[in-house]
Image 1 (cartoon, rainbow, N blue to C red):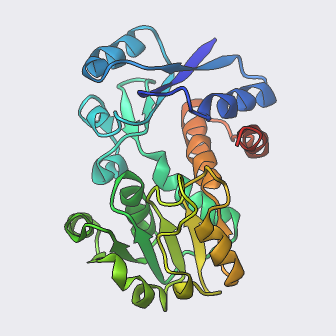
Image 2 (spheres, rainbow, N blue to C red):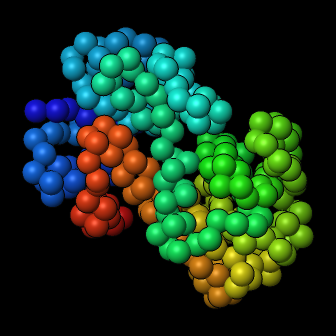
Length: 264
């Protein structure tokens, strides 16, 4: 029986176990998905122990995504983003970032054409994944962040990207086709990081927040005629990408989606 899992601290809130377990059940795979919660200074030992025990693959979450980068062989995308969220132990431990693929596949699920200009709000981990993912799709990426210096740092690493303050959002969105909220704004309070008047029907809007599933940003975007993509789709497809990398099999997306949304 193969064992996969999630490495983070804390991990008790994670929705990854039921999502992956549903995939194993749907395809008749003898495997389990478990959670591991080492102390931050025990990360190297935890990874070494996982490899020694024959763990087949690990997802990685806060606070370890950046630190894992130095403990595995990252692929090109993970190295550029500067974070690993998936480790494959088949051979030399390799690190991947499926958050970027999750964003692209979430948009594709909603028939969004990734062309033209994209606005990414936030320059943290999710913002980095979004910026690199959309730039790799040949989009013109504009990064807006509360601290402009962080946006400038990220824009400097993403080919062709530009950095902007949050008050520039109305101008940035006027001719944009894609908007990604990569901040936590809207998770704890019913607020939006984007002025309602800046939203329009030509946008496809993905909010990385998935609790609540329908944020104020998505409600207002929908009212403006935009295509809306909730954060659970991003969460789903980063898991789908990890599953497919580990198993070499096509993921049962619908079964994983049902398991995920039944717990939201």
